[in-house]
Length: 206
Image 1 (cartoon, rainbow, N blue to C red):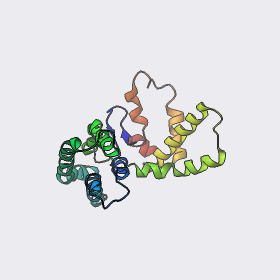
Image 2 (cartoon, rainbow, N blue to C red):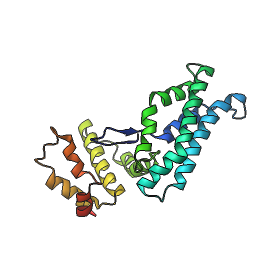
Image 3 (tube, one colour):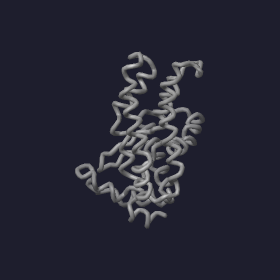
Image 4 (cartoon, one colour):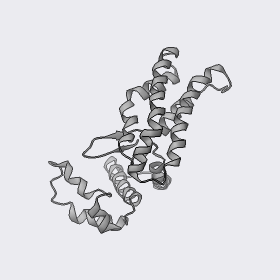
């Protein structure tokens, strides 16, 4: 889940997914003392989401600045809490799994601070693929594994175009006419000029 730049190789993981791991670690009786620790993890995640909601209408640069001011202290407290909590839980418990997952991917969970365009949640992506998931129940099969991969690639291109305010048909025309002959296998950075947020693509495919 999350976001990766092709040339920057920066990956951001979804905080919604991490929050879900803490929710799964809650005991059936959420009033029990054992619910305190996973509850604290959920509280940290909720605080980040609350701050993010107040930053929705800011520019990417403003959002980045406000995240560093408001969210970085929350993140620092979160990682300190994890370090203090690890030794208090059973190694094979669901809470231990959540803590280990967070620590193993600390860098990816922090990367969103570097770019105001990044989202801490993949809810937008999940909502975008929901029609595809519903449709898949109707056609059931893609014919072959290669067919399934091709279908996923096409849906990804179309939904990325829509998410960036492009006309999907114009964008497909653009890349099908422009990409052949581009040596992006040897020079992956060339692809940056054909991604949905490229200024030239924005101008041609709105």
